Length: 226
Image (cartoon, rainbow, N blue to C red; front, side, top):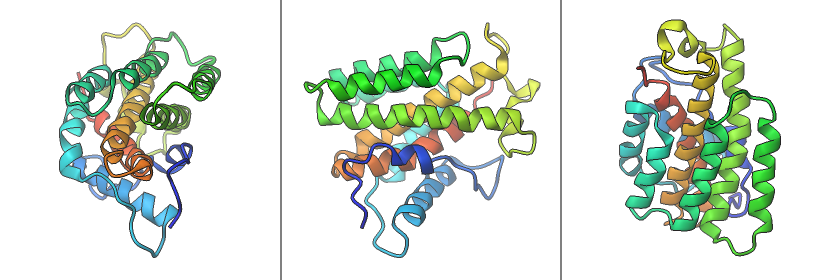
């Protein structure tokens, strides 16, 4: 079985959800199950499945993403539920702000990569913070590319979320861009949910949890309509 315990880039490459049987009217559990399938079929085919958090543990967080796509509040819920420590909470808020508090997409990758460097160079940070924040930052770049492609490609099955009738109306930014950023933030924080719950199992369980849960969280966030 592949050792995931120190590989914080894998979640960014295989976590996005594209195969949903009842798409676009899918159930939240489908997103989770597709994440589990992707994890094991890509990284661990034909052998014992990775240990990951159970759907029942993830469900309340997915329901929050579906309700209002508020990644900031989900970080606070994780902290309130004692799933992350103060340090991780603060670093996740920094990452979340880098994604959401911007006027355009220019320099996105550079800012996220600088954030990763700062985490990597800080030897005082806990293993929890290192895993959740570095993996989350890698997801941010991959997810941004994924959702920008969904916006630009009318044949992409996710393109429908950018239809004028489906995009929030109160926003200063171009509606499509704000939708991308909100979905990316939910992707990243959703990964943190899976990582925090998976860390109870092991460091490898944290990386597996990030991989499984992030894509389903962004899929859940697409259900939010104002």
